[in-house]
Image (cartoon, rainbow, N blue to C red):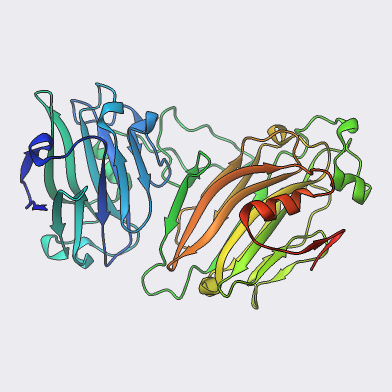
Length: 400
């Protein structure tokens, strides 16, 4: 392992680093948001698609892809970068009120070849740090250990590199379009199936607090097609010509291995203060509530939960996921909201939206976007259960 000091530089080829490679940021002691800025020859973020961070986990063609684990890892494929991008700058910004002084022993590591160690002793009261950069000079890619403190946070870094931050969302009654190409720093959007984000507990906190899962959709967007009335609608006597009503639900597995189900169908509402520490709020059978459907998870008891599969099924109306424009948003205290859109699927009744997992105390959210339709006597619930291995026992009309 080559140990670099601040200001040291080297050619990747001389160091034995070949593309693709991984840049790991192992940052400890304080909560930090990590990012990679893809810059042009003027050291500017001229194309916002090449800023990779919690709300944009990959650049085009997966030239840079971020896994927000611990440590955070950037998968870098230099061959997939356009000629206009000549530098990748890896940064970290404080998410909170601390300063870089509070950083404990940390490092930036490229593969298992180069390591650049840093700690709070290297800084003053800065709110961010430019850790290192991979850059092309005279046609040759090189690495430079920077370790430069920066007074502003992530928003200030964005401005420093010439990017534009999207304006905060306006109230629903007065919609305002964000400027073209602006970077949205306010939420994490999992774009592709398999995309994931890993969140750690805030320093000094007992857990993740009140985790609020909201499902919202365009109730009138699906065209009425009565002849395609689905199985669940037949069971409940619902008509397919009155729009679409989605039901939010959750299959869970406790830390001790016990599985279970929370959903309105069957009145399996769950409980917030006692096991399973997951509760579905009052169901809206009209499908017209502006607040949609809501599920609460007691994040202070997250150690009691192994995993929770968030799903939705079409309770009423013609199965047409493309027309629902559905979106699930996961909110929790002091964390950026995580958004998963129901942007695929066809005429299936059931969608497995996202998996929330306890990974050694970290909360990991993975976009699933898996769709299920009844097959013969097996319901979509049963097929989804089998696919994800919860092992629930099913009988007609109820769950044991």
